[in-house]
Length: 234
Image (tube, rainbow, N blue to C red; front, side, top):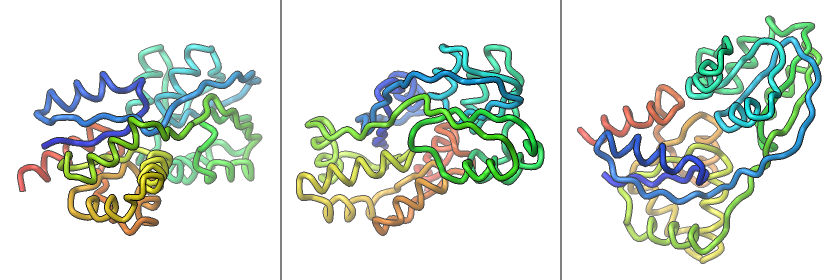
């Protein structure tokens, strides 16, 4: 099974190795780019970190203050390796974090470290705590020849399944399809093969294009692999 994956370039090697170890071929084309931003954070009782990328930047720039709440096991592991005790919501989503930690955060000083395209639900924490949001990086949609070629080849049947790991990747994919006049063909092809969305926001973005994706039980690439293995065996 050949799987299309569209993560940022910085994750290419680890993603390809992960999938190839499990017997999958990878069609890797980054649909977004990460651009780091300069920030200066103040003291806090808690720091919320919403992605592996944010965790790596926060560690590199020494931006973590107080106790740490993170979204995702991979994000947690990045932080735990550096000695931090990490609290995780029961499911890896901003909505779960908001629901499960708002009581804990009531009246606290909280720094929220994430991209400029984070889920707006976490801003509602400001109703319960002193929340300060810091955008550690900007997500740029890629519309180059590499991306257009990839969308065209996927539409022509070059992959057996695709994985979308963020709303912005979905947006970039379909913007590229529209720019070369194959949007309808791209949607048609994705309706014919397994499409996997990591998380509800990504699934909702795909639904805007009439696509109902599979969602792994665990919102990680390990969860994606377990789902793909089930699909491959049916």
